[in-house]
Amino acid sequence: MHPLTQAGTHMSEVRPALDRLSHRQLLVLHFTCKGLRNQEIARQLGVCERSVKAYISQLFLIFDVTNRTELVDVIGEELRNDLVTRVSRIEDGLPEGAAPLDIYKASGGG
Image (cartoon, rainbow, N blue to C red; front, side):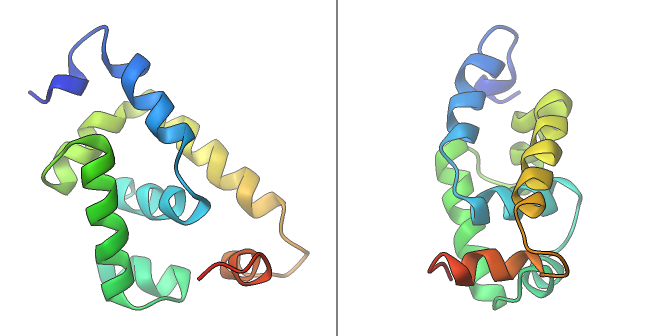
């Protein structure tokens, strides 16, 4: 069992890390938790697969895990629900009809 999934440390250590993620990292984490493969995530975000791999590597470092299964376990069900809410808020800030990627282009993101 990963140290962050142990009772008592999970929420207090994972939530602050989640709070520091960029919009793009939140989206990649969300799609990873949903079980999408790198290629599918890249297609959703309109980026290359190599970019997705880089984001996932960053997430591994942030959450101190070594694979996707550990990453999903560390996030846990409650925080996955919170993640869905955060992603919805990102998308709610978009102009009508805009794809999620448009918000990043408009803000100078990648």
